[in-house]
Picture 1 (cartoon, rainbow, N blue to C red):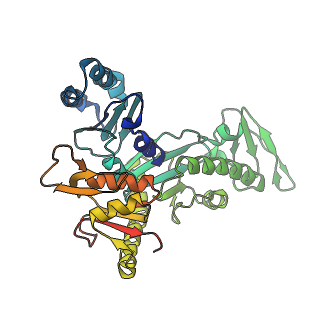
Picture 2 (cartoon, rainbow, N blue to C red):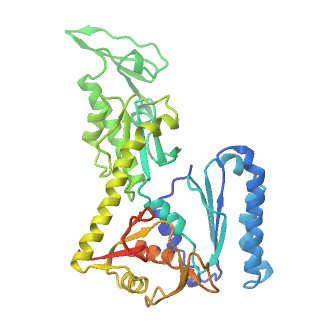
Picture 3 (spheres, rainbow, N blue to C red):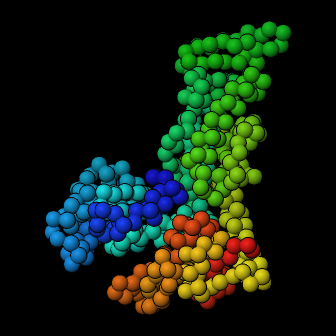
Amino acid sequence: MDYFGQEHLRELLDERVSGQEAVGPAISIYLRTERDQQHMPEERLRLRGLVEQAERQLAGQLDKRTTAALIEPIARLVDDVAFWRAHTTEGLCIFRGPDFFRVYGLPVRFEDRVAINDNFHTRPLIEYLQSPERYWVLALSQGAVRLYEGNQGGCWPIDLAGVPRSLKEALGYAVAQDALDFRGTGAVSSTEHGGRGSWAVGKGVIYNGQGYGDDDDKVERKKFFRMVADGVQELLRDERGPLILATVDINEPLFREVCSIENLADQAVRANVERWSTAQLHEQAWPIAKRQRDALVERALKHFEVGFGRGKLETDLASIGQLLVANQIRMLIMERGRQYWGRYDTEMGTLEVLGDGRSGPTQDSVELIDELAEQAVLHGAEVVVVPPGRLPADSGVAAILRGT
């Protein structure tokens, strides 16, 4: 599964095609996919249909040559069998503009959609990033380091770019504390000297004869854990969801001692999880993540109450549009699933509602909550998505003003 974080979202938001020398529309395609390969033929046909839909929409805007150049890298994916075999997630999103092309496979059940505008359609991704159900599991042992992203439905492995995968990879050798944790291939021996084990070296292995938990061994493990913690912190630096540690009891205090990740959950999955399935990991991690999720939603609703009491709350869409452009909002709370269509001038802040989710889009309209969420991210405001029915605002959107 691809990792998609705040920096990737900002890249999409910053790609304002209309302000570039190479003028042209921004194409956003979302496709619902399945994890197993048996649906591949159907998914390829559905993507072909979305490509043809994009071509029809572009026909009235661009000449045939420019349209073909924009569509070509997307159309090439349809027949790329290797791409489809490697894609095993629940959603595919494709973004194409002049000199810009990105494809992400994510654990999100997107509805099939094509959107063509001056900027990319990012509302589904904002909701995905700000979902309070989102969590991570760091499965940690000397022999293997794995990272999983999860939500209420399950968890999935993601690429650990820049993070050492084992103690041997991090330090150049492995420390084997006892026979059960032995990871090397060479013969290892130890001798007792005054009740303390000596170090014996096999093929790429350093072994402490006294066994698991020796002071020297702790030093090596703490070096390793610090490197892992630093790498994971860099990878998840903009994320707010809980990071849940999954490791044996003896590793947990050492990792917490060297880890400065703010969203490291207080509770851990205390077990040797190397051979666990993702279903087993999710079963143990989700109750921990759910408590964190509930706390995040309640925190946002508490801010709503405080802001209302202090006169620092706004629920009118037009007013929120102006306040965002003026950088007066510190938190935007959105009810999942709400939609409004209209026009929004992101320079002047003027906003006009032309219809809601029941009426659908009108000509030259944009999805307004999508636009408001984008502006909130660009202006550094916190965005929180809450379940339907939890936000006591008729509009389904609330802005907490700065100074609250």
